[in-house]
Amino acid sequence: MAYFERQRTTKNIMKLVYNEFEIGNKTKEQEESGGESDAEEIGGIFKKVTITQKKKHKEKEQLDLDECSFFYSLDKPKLRDWLNEANKQLIINSFVTGKRSADEDAAELLKLDDASDGDDEMYGDFEDLETGEKHASDQKTDENKEELGSKRKSESTKSEILNKKLRLKAKFDAEYDNPDDHRIKGDHSYYENLKAEALKQSELNKSVFESLDEGLRIEVEGFRPGLYVRMLFKNMPSEFVTNFDSSYPLLIGALNMAEQNIGFVSCKVKKHRWYKKILKTNDPLIISLGWRRFQTLPIYSKIEDDLKCRYLKYTPQHVTCNMHFYGPITPQNTGFLALQTVNNNSNEIKKLGFRVAATGSVNEINKSTQIMKKLKLVGTPLKIYKKTAFIKDMFTSTLEVAKFEGARVKTVSGIRGQIKKALNKPEGAFRATFEDKILMSDIVFCRTWFKVDVTRFYAPVVNLLLPIGNKNAWEGMKTKGQLKRERNIINDANLDSMYTDIVRQPKVFKPLVIPKELQKGLPYKLKPKAKTTTLTKNRKPTILTNRIAVVKSPHEQNVSNVM
Image (cartoon, rainbow, N blue to C red; front, side, top):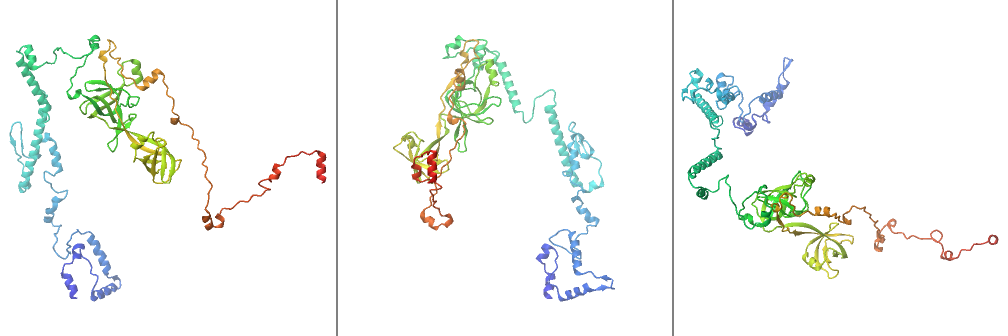
C-alpha cells in the first residue's frame, strides 16, 4: 500500500509525456469493489456504470481537451476560465476577428495603395507637400486614448508610407510627364548625362575653334564629319586605277596592328536554315569577317568529350559546329557571314534561292590546329596458333607496322588483341595476340586517329579590280561539284558502296567425331552405331556391273526359259 501511496504523490514520466494513465496493478480492495459494482443493480432495473465504461467516457472527453505536456485534472483549479469575459480579452487579438496592428492589417494596407486618398481622415496626421502645412486629426475616441502609445506608432508608420509614395509619384511626374524637358533624370540616366556632356563639349569646341584658320583647325581638331578629304594608298594594283568606277561606292576601314597577321582561326558556325544545301568540308567559302571579304577552304569539326576536335565531312543540319580556316587574325566574338558566291547573276540567284550559307562568330586564334579524323584499318588472319595469329592486308609496309606496335585491335566477334611485331614476309603482315583463339573467318579492326591539316588558302575578294560593269560578277575558286557539272564528269560507282543482294553460302560442318575413351562412358543409345550395307539393297555386285549386256533373239529366249 505504501508503494501505491508513494506513486500517487511522485511525478511520473509517463504521466508527464502521455497525460494521465491507469495503473495496471490495482489493489485487492479496488478489484473487489469493482467486481461488486459491476454486479450491482439499482432496484433491479438500472445497472451501475462499470469501470470500463467510465474509462471509455473519459477517453472521449480527453479527445476534446487541449494537448499539453503537463495535464491538469479538472479538480485542480490551475486552468483559466476562458468563459470569463476578462480572460477572453487577453487572447481576443490572437484570432482573425481581433484587432491587428497597422502594419499587419490587410484593410489598412489596401487603403495605403491608393495614393490619391492620402488626405482622407483614415490616415490620421499628414503633411501637404505643396504648401508645407501639417494637418492633424481632431476625432479621438475613448478607445484611442486608452491605447495612445500604440496608436501614435501606427499613425507615424502610415504617414511615412504615404509620404514616401507621394515623393515617388512626384519624382515620376517630374521625369516622364514634364512636357518641357523629356530627358530622363533617374538613376539610369548615365548615358543621357554622358551624351549631354559630349554635346556640351562639342559646342564649346565649336565656339573656340570657329575663329581659327581652317588648316590650323584641322591639325588641332582633326577632320570633322562632312569634310572632303584626299587619301593616299600605297602598293595598289594598276587594275584598280584602270578600272576605277566613280559611281561604284567604296567602303574604307582601318585595321589594328594585330589584325594584319594571317593564321588559323577557329569559329563557331551554323548553317543557315533557309539555305538549301548543307556545307561540305574543303569546299571554298566566301567569308565576310570584320572589314575584309575573302575566300578560304574551311574544315568542319565537332568537340568531343575529351576536348578533341573530330573531323566532320558535312555541317550538321540544325546545330552548331566548329570551323577552322586559314585567314586574317580577328578578335574573339567577332561575327561573320559566309557565302558560296557573290555573283549577282539572276540564274545563279534563282538556283540558290537564299545566298547566306552560314553565320557564326570567332572562338579562338592559334598558329596551329589539332583536328583528328577517325580511321578504321581492316585485316584478315594469315595463320593462327592458339591465341597468337598472323594478320595481313592491314598495313602496306613494315614501317607502318612499326608505328602501330602496341595498338589495340578487335575482331568482328568482339575478341580483343594487341599488335606485337612485324613479319618479314609478306610485306605489311604482323603478329598479334588475342584474348582467345580466333577463326580464319574473323575480320580484325584497328581504330586509329590521324591529324587533318587545314589548307593554307586565303584569297581576298578583288571585285574592285574588274572592269566597269562587272564589279558584281567576281568568281573565285569553284567547288568540285561545280567543276564536275560543267565538264560532265561522272565518277565510277564503287562496287563496295552499292546496295547488292547478299548471297550467303551454306555452312558445311565437319562430322562429329567422338573419342573412343568417351564412347565407353556413354549409354548404348548414345553410342555411334556402325551401319552395315548389303549387296541386294544398296549396291550390285561388281561382277554383274562389269558384264556386257547381251540382247537375245526370241528363239534363244525360249531355249533359256526351257532350261
